[in-house]
Image (cartoon, rainbow over all chains, first blue to last red; front, side):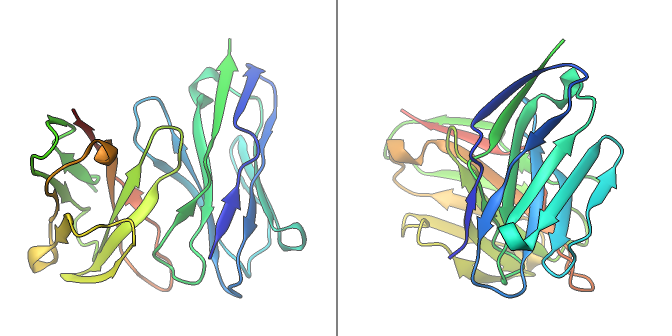
Length: 114
Length: 115
């Protein structure tokens, strides 16, 4: 069974700081999918990124970047120059080989203070 | 595209009552999922449909829970004889399986409180 660990329960930073959210996964599947979602105070989960296990290229999207390393089973998420609007709970997870059943970590609450 | 919608957004009920939630997926999405999220936890998979067929149910889904997706469009999740432990946010998501990609888009959720 899949297991996803987000060791950081809460992180607090000051605006414009860079912040990295850690994610470690365990899976026995050879093909799997990793993802990140954001859950702002409004409650709706917002999709950020989905990555296939065979694609280890890092991804950059504006102020967001993701570092996928199979050797350490990690899929970390970095926000550069954080903003107050980035305040949310961020969930990492994987779908194993099922391609439909998402297993989420417990989330990291990020608070960006002005 | 219009996003996933869920109704109602909030439901307060007394223990022992039955409740039903509705989810309308994004148009043309053939897969629909239900998850449950309790305070301080990530969402947990409950069940999913491909078109009208319910293909998997989690062990979390006791006999008191039933989900349907008639005609492969909207879906309903019914909880019979509610218990206080059923209090949670019930999330619906939908996706369209194309070329091996299957990104799930979530609705706003229905928050259930069982008194």
